[in-house]
Image 1 (cartoon, rainbow, N blue to C red):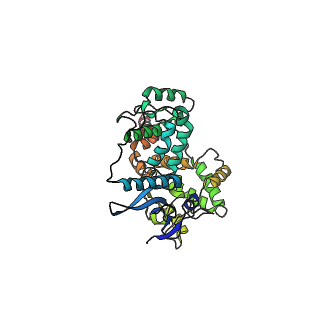
Image 2 (image 1 turned 180 degrees about the horizontal axis):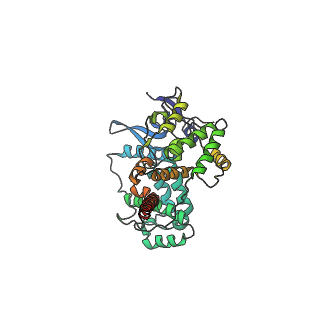
Image 3 (image 1 turned 60 degrees about the horizontal axis):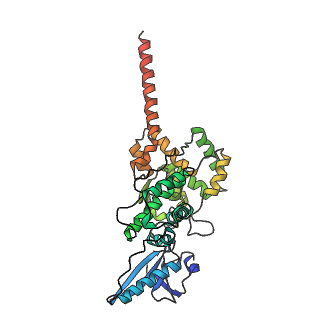
Length: 385
């Protein structure tokens, strides 16, 4: 489907508009060639159309989710100026200042990682503002050493989870600084810095808790239909919350769901009979779009969290998170004899280490089996006495 065109003055309001019913490019009235491409999926990118050495060029500047209109306009101007000067004598490019601070580097870093998912960009930007800039904001990027990182780690001893989330973001900043020439290559001071060991929360539903939850879901079908369907799909598939809440009909090809992207990249979700029935009952004539659109904005996925808080309270499960349904799926799979490698494939883990957290459950199953075998042998031996 070809894109439509509309000439407007690009600003934040245009970028926040609801996704159009057909592909659209909004071209800026003030800066010719600068535009905002909108897809019917809701994804929006800043683009630039120009000519360089007589050849037409069409470039993507970044995602509207992570780059605001002022940043995009500056990037477009930078490209246009560079194209205009191409082939002309120019002053040597000055080497970046050795005094460039983290506070000064932060905006440039966020522009360089415009390809991040919106949720990733938001989470990492918060980590930088909340934990990295308060510690290093006034310090030169080029002069940071491993000793500085170790001192920061020690100072974050009361916030181990915050440190564990922030240190890989800081490592990414140093890596980008090396790429841009602000630091020597291979000088990342975060390399080898140990994270705090934390006991990951483990909460598995028991048989009685599953029955209590099933009863509550049944009673709430008319009151909270979208949330009930999402929760049931989470129970039956072991998928992550956003993988089901953001599910689109185009990705569903029974007996599988083919996600083009997830926390670990492209992923396959395997549909069992109960999960397929839920989707079959919901589909009707729909072949595209969100399976669970938001109430006010149909281009935004439905948020099941508020309903979950109500439902879990009714079931007496106030300490259970939606993500614990995924852990419970893995627990039941292992207790039913499914191997760790198969569980990892069912859950869509990219690394074996992610599945290793369930290894003790597999050990428990083996121990229980050994106990049953030993008890049976003992009975037979005592019968012969």
